[in-house]
Amino acid sequence: MQFIEMSGKTLLRIVQDDGPTVDELAAVGVVDESIIRINRQGDIELRRTDRWDLIGGLIGDFEVRVKRETGLDWA
Image (cartoon, rainbow, N blue to C red):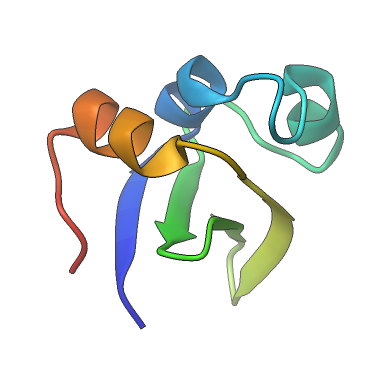
């Protein structure tokens, strides 16, 4: 599966009305220093100390926003 990784700070900048809110992400533990990955389907995963947790998803035109904010492509 291909992902784009980013910080929690970057994720919080790209969320919009078509996904989890900043408050919802904070409630599951996303902070600026978090390690986040998003797959091509828009699933958001948060890196815990021993695993990745699926914490939500993005819908809509998220791919353009993710690539623009991170400067990365799917890997």
